[in-house]
Amino acid sequence: RRTEGAVRCCACAEVPLRSPPEPPIQHRCSVPRLCTFHSASRRAVARPHGGAAGAAPCEAVRVRPVQGHGPPPQSPHAGHTSIIVHKDEFYYGAGGISSCAPGGTLLGPPDSVIDLGNTEVTEEIFLEYLSSLGESMFRSESYHFFERNCNTFSNEVAQFLTGRKIPSYITDLPSEVLATPFGQALRPFLSTTQFHPPGGNTFNRDNGQS
Image (tube, rainbow, N blue to C red):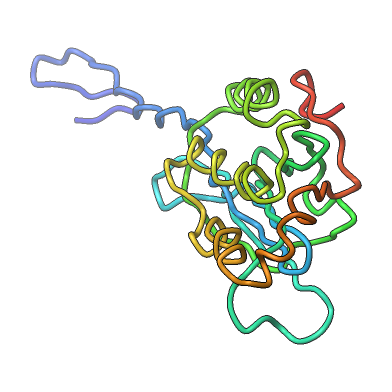
């Protein structure tokens, strides 16, 4: 017969009931997003996002373009991109790597957002990675309008976080422009152009921004 909280066998020995196993500890991950701005810039955003049933909670990383004044473009394009992950937005320009709250630059919210996938890169590791980029590939003096810009940075960071590149229509845009007579005519001027969206803060390893 049964007694509360115990099982009685035929030898009348009481065996305590086992407690149900505790659920496994869930590890947080991130889902990076790429944000693009058609009129002036592009950026990528990552925000907290729940995964599939049984999966650990994740943070999404997306890309979203910002549309300027006038009719929408006939083909996908962007002037600036950024990455939002771990609750902040990160981008690169003539002032080096900067960070801000999502949508915190004068460009405002992006025009479109693209999910890049999931990442398990922790915030600590990510900030260390950005610090190393700011001291090597993406110093402020390394900025070049065509060859090393915000899109180059977004592509590099996206691959580090997810192993995936950002869409080719973004990264191929400079070569497509330079392949035209108009682009060649403007190249001397554009090559010396310095662009950096105002409103952010120079990246700082200690707290993500200065």
